[in-house]
Length: 105
Image 1 (cartoon, helix red, strand yellow):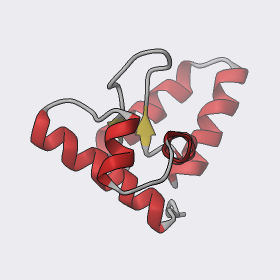
Image 2 (cartoon, one colour):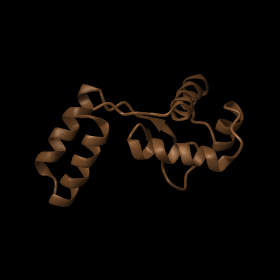
Image 3 (cartoon, helix red, strand yellow):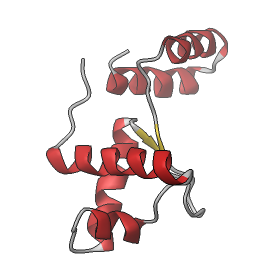
Image 4 (cartoon, rainbow, N blue to C red):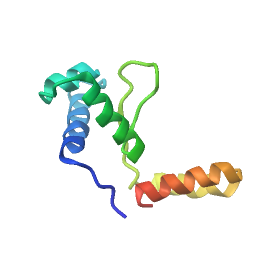
């Protein structure tokens, strides 16, 4: 199962990835807004939240410039999921299974 992104979500993800590559840190929501000609910070926040929910972006709540584009197709990540599944609680297992489903692993 492939992760499906809207055109705007893909644009936000690509912008973040390019910004980090060029500057060495993640953009603020205002920088994303300006860079993509979006109309509000809340629109950026909604796209970021949706990307986090889909498992392609990571952010640290309450901290600035912590956006990180994730690649869960990498073999090491799959192995980490498998290893964690062997030692996790039932509650953690449910969460990991949902994450794996979302990520198409």
